Image (cartoon, rainbow, N blue to C red; front, side):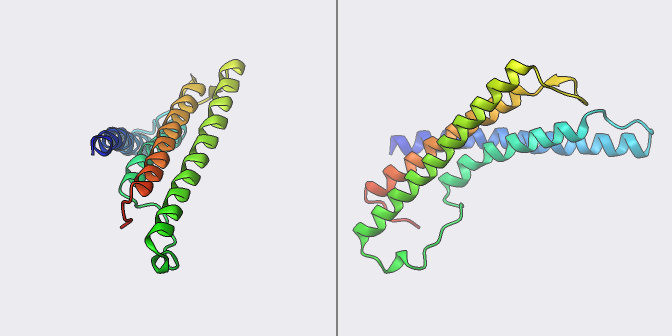
Length: 161
């Protein structure tokens, strides 16, 4: 029970980061449109900023999605299996989720390292790109933990909703 509470707390924190990102996207888009249409002065780098913040908001929101089991599931055959097989399939699904996010986190981290070495900058914002890639890799690593949590939950004889 303590593990579930901690995982939920961490997911709520990540969800909060995602909500802040959504508000930042809204504010940036509003500022850019009003600035361009009313004052003839669009916000420089707005599209880049919205794109990167959107990436971070989605990465942050995935943790709560996994925690609440709102991810895509195919269950039409699973309901016909006996409970031990359902638990095994649930555990295997959690392992696949964890493996996917771990692989994505690993390659995203390597990409961030390459960006840091080359010093690639965002032209509109005049900021380096690698901090965003590192942040996204960290969020993917967080989602790896949620895949492992789903695996453990399935093995602990918890029936899936």
